[in-house]
Length: 278
Ligand SMILES: Cc1cc2nc3c(=O)[nH]c(=O)nc-3n(C[C@H](O)[C@H](O)[C@H](O)COP(=O)(O)OP(=O)(O)OC[C@H]3O[C@@H](n4cnc5c(N)ncnc54)[C@H](O)[C@@H]3O)c2cc1C
Image (tube, rainbow, N blue to C red; front, side, top):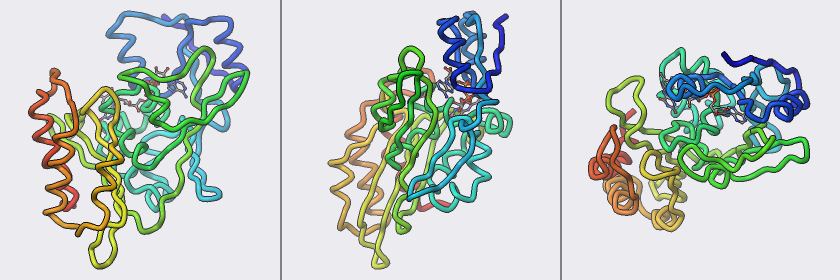
């Protein structure tokens, strides 16, 4: 059995980790506890973050939404700020796991697990999110795409923990969408997922288009050159079919127990058209 510590401040977290370098940070536990059971490896101490002020809450200030890492998926769904300004994230949280997982699991845990199938990640990538990393020595802020370096890998070192997520509020003209295909309709890890942030004029001209793809590579993928090629084109089924074609050629998925690489490419080709489905 691991000892469970519930510190009330970051300083206490750092002190425990200094004393016990093998200690693990625990948020909602929906990934960590499952992994511990599967591996049979028990850290000497689990450091629960739930009592630390400042790690929860969603606030908007100076055009930036700040989200604490202990914010649960259900908190995201309940937040008027997320619904109004970050609809793509609201849509991603809606299809993440089941009600118990959404009540326990956190945004910080989803980011630090760094799974290419993590549902919040494509949304965070199209929103150009940044993450705050804190240690006793300093605080640094890096883009989400810098933070995640591979499947299950992040740039966190030593005493560092994730202490916040910062998202610039997109222009009000942007619309956000999140679509995923899994092995079944509910409680499914994605086979392919896609977040989109689109700005389309009333005459249907695309002003700006961002797409981020999950489960098609070691990390979430964005291709700025492909994105910029859509500006000026007319929004509609023909464009979305072309978006699917282009990304399906560009992505390099692997085959695993959930799907083959060729099936993932086929699914990716059709996913943008699902934007037209409610
Ligand atoms: C039945 C089931 C269904 C699921 N379905 C989905 C799904 O559909 N989509 C999806 O994306 N995920 C799914 N998951 C995975 C999981 O629920 C999510 O990834 C969740 O967001 C993890 O958050 P958590 O708070 O539970 O993380 P935890 O398990 O507490 O932590 C995960 C990892 O992050 C580290 N960590 C957590 N917070 C911090 C921090 N602030 N700083 C540094 N490190 C930190 C922990 O040490 C651990 O290594 C599912 C899990 C289960 C059990």
